[in-house]
Amino acid sequence: MRNNAMILLYNILIFIALIVGFPFILPIIVFSEKRRKTVLHRLTLIFDHSPSALNPIWIHALSVGEVLSAVPLVHAMNARVGKKRVVFSASTYTGFTMAGKLFRDHADTIFYFPYDIPFCVRRVMNYIKPLMMIMVETDIWPNFLFAMKAPVMLVNARLSDRSYSGYRRFLFFTKQIFAKFSKVCAQTEEDARRFADLGVSAENILVSGNVKFDQPEIS
Image (cartoon, rainbow, N blue to C red):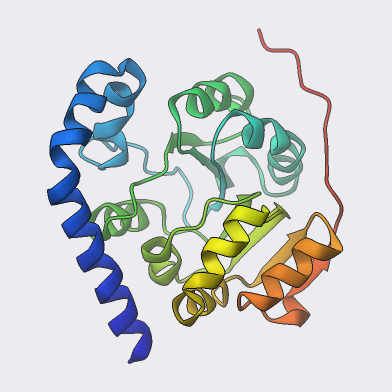
């Protein structure tokens, strides 16, 4: 019951922010080519990426750096379950473009991660229906995590001082969000401590180190 109340409050705040911020958001979209190319996709007004197989493994990375970090993970999942069982999302135009170059032969479909607005999240969930979700580093959104029914793993996970301090200000809410992660592979012991403090169960956290990979050649 408390979870429902908190997510309702979160969505009310999003609605207010969109209404108040619309005069400022619109020019950004109009004058930014990258924003224009992504906004309809992230609103799920354009979405034609139904996976070929039921219940795929969904891998998500925020932008270019995280996409590059995800290369070995995508290849490993491809080898383990096959291309048709792997789908990939990115949040930014540059991340999506990079993913298209790197994973066109390793993922069944590549798409934009939805905005954290209930109807956007529900629409993507209805299309993808993942068996599990693997998120690279950090891209944490309440509506998405509360709507996700499958296990969610966070790999190469980190929390900057600024992010950690911000989450701690709203600990009554963030603990409910972070508790949604079924597994967190943290970069450092300090990151692990921070994730535990924010609500991830200690038994679901392991320290895997800061995994850095050579950047692949892009044709």
